[in-house]
Amino acid sequence: MEPIDSLIEQRRAKLNALLAKGINPFANKFTPGEACAAARQQYTEGRPVALAGRITAHRDMGKSHFIDIKDQSGRIQVYVQKPVIGDEQWEIFKLLDLGDFIGVKGSLFTTRTGEISVKCEAFTVLAKALRPPPAKYYGLEDTEIRYRQRYLDLIANDPVKQVFLHRSLILREMRNFLQSRGFIEVETPMMQSIPGGAAAQPFVTFHNALGCQFYLRIALELYLKRLLVGGMDRVFEIGRNFRNEGLSRRHNPEFTMLEAYQAYGDYESMMELVQSMICHIADQIHGAYKIEHKDAEGNVTKTIDLSPPWRRARYKDLVREKAGADWFELSPPERRARAVSLGAEIGKEYEDFEVTGAVFEKLIEPTLIQPTFVTHLPKELVPLAKLSPDDPSTVEVFECCINGQEIAPAYTEQNDPIEQRERLQHQAGGEQQKLDEDFLVALEHGMPPAGGLGLGIDRLCMMLLGQESIRDVILFPQMKPK
Image (tube, rainbow, N blue to C red; front, side):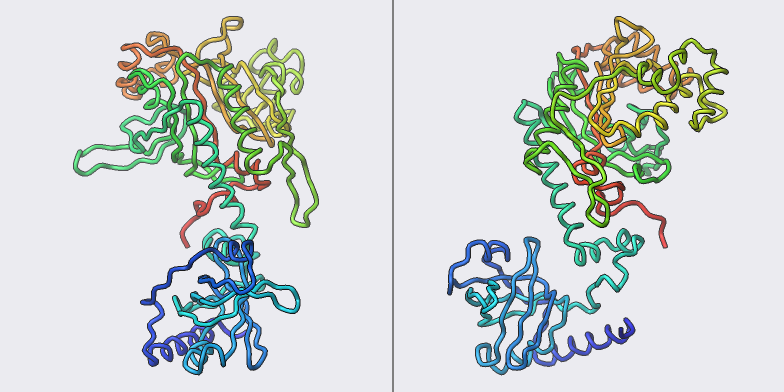
């Protein structure tokens, strides 16, 4: 393989040769009449077409050449002959390289081998690639390059491109489903003076004109609830959240969430909503409720069955199954010791409820491959939810777990402003400056009973598209600068 600098030098020489012929490829315009895939699907012998794309293959047959051009929809073969395009364009054609963009006009025909192709009558150079395209041997198996230079990954790996085209369809169907149920899409601030709606470490920024500190939001929740107060009964937002925390196969500091709120609903109605919505999306994307995950060799490693109804299980019951029937009768020191013996990672500063939470997150959640609604979580975990009438130590909450991770938490929203203030003060450790007073004032104006849902779109895409790392469903995952 030639050194990259030599290849770049050769391509620059061809660019200069084009310019010498009076052709600036970066200034040309061409309007394709259809996509490459559409031309193949709507084949009629001799039909005229105008197509554009990147050159991805070139086969020199002497007096004639075959090239492949590729757009977002797929590829099509182009047959180029000197007598047809003429001497002048033939000389230009010889200056083309893999990776260049061209527009082609011609007519459809089928080769002797049955390949639908375009008989080129004229072409236009649309962009000269000054660097060679990636190939498998050129490092596209290297995950560092794949994530840092995602455009190369998309050029070289069609399955990767399909993942992101499907991600777009997932978002479209999510919006279609919610809007069909009367939900209104809204937008709320990404920069907030007080980060609320979750317990997480925020990113900090500074607003020069206002002379004060702001935070990138860690959740969408509190502003959406203000809209319930204002009389918007069904609202949703799809937007970015930011948490200044670690990276892993399941965590990226910048991630996409759906949050939806329904007046006069509760955690049961949210349960029906998330189950119906995910089933709708799976049916639209795959035409089925069973999702297969495969390894690099194409072997099925697990099958997720989304067929309703989904399993329901209480948080405490799952903990007892894993950590012992007497778990909640133990003293806090005994619980901590048993959690460590089971293999859970327990921080020295963990409160008692966090010890139980660690057992659930590390030892139980990863085993919940099939859809499971884990209900009635400890009240300390969700200060924005209503207490369960039958067990005031828990709240009317569920975590929807699929594929061994939490996909969507939801709950019956707390709309009692007095109770809400007390619980937020407890969460803030009594620090008044951490309270979102504007939100509490809004509650005092009266918020209807409601159900609320948060859904991690990146994790949903991982599950629906058979990807095991969050970086494989985010176009440009966060990475340390070189």
